[in-house]
Length: 375
Length: 166
Image (tube, rainbow over all chains, first blue to last red; front, top):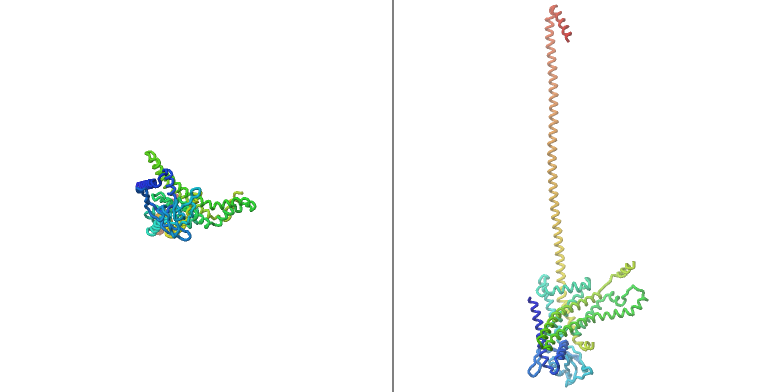
């Protein structure tokens, strides 16, 4: 009874926070209609930010006061430039550092002159130079927070084993079955009893990292870390590196000589002109599918959820409001499931690729099968 | 696609790689290895305990079977012993009976033989005495009868008469 209530409370909180944010945004940019406004808000939400905002208030002059933390900006522009993002005043001012001027435009930092001029190309894209941005953004902060949370959670679980005769206590009772599930049904099932052990740390870390960040994405903090293409690319790149670094002889043989001795060499040449490039392409497509899947699912979830919340302000009626509320409530519940599901799918597929990479055939095994078939 | 590329933040990518690898190494050292080892040890322990319980059960069964077997054997031995004792008793009784009979028979025979011989001896004795007495009597009678002629003649007559009768 307690847990569903807590969940409802959380979801209600999400929606409430969303509401107040919309309400504030409304005052900021007058002259635009509500639909564009909501669209922009959603786009803004999906992007990374140089601030950790909790909420914003608007005073009687229509000026927005943001409540939150400015985060450090780290730029590489002919030398390391470090300054607080408060210098931008939420994109309203030009930050001057060591004689260079920078401006924040749509959550991105551009180099500019003292007046903050931004030149645009035909499609309204800024053409100013973008310095390399290593800032500790909102997403980076959330990654650090999640990392620390995971470290604390699982090292305390590990300690409770040592103290308590290998019996988990407290939160460990919830997390241990998940760890065991990943071991038995993801790692051992896909990689095999012999080799699963060396992949376990990565699989466990990636699962809990994605899951926790997905869940944080559903909280009122409104961070969209796993829905960021750079984050999913990094994760997929790690999967790619691990897969190919641990690849066995059989794995590479399968890529460059998929038919083995099943065909004479003159027959293979013709087929391999097509087959080998496909196999090599496959090496890259597999992790690419991973990164797009996670990114697209999380982004789509956020867009749908926020659009439904936004509908409340577009309808502004007794029918439309509750309807949108009910819908967004239902979608929120589904998103909780999706958060877990996407973490599971990512881990599962990573394990599957590791399984391909670490596979070893018994010498001559395949040919035995062929020989049997021939009889 | 263009938007995706445009959205790609190299800084975030950089931090993600650094932080994730760091997190992976730390978690591996402080969490996953101890957790997986502990779980593994526990599972091994459970497996061992189950096997031990199974063994104990089997041994218990063996012990029960053994004791039952022993009991059966003891019972069979007792039966055998009793049977043997009974047989010995019966044999002894029959043996002694036979012996007694043989002895008795022997004694009876001996007694009979003794009686027979006594009887014979006694009869022989009587015969002798009767013979002596008869001879004596006959002597006296003969002496007396043969003392005169008449009597001698009469005797001859009597005797002849007797012979005829015979």
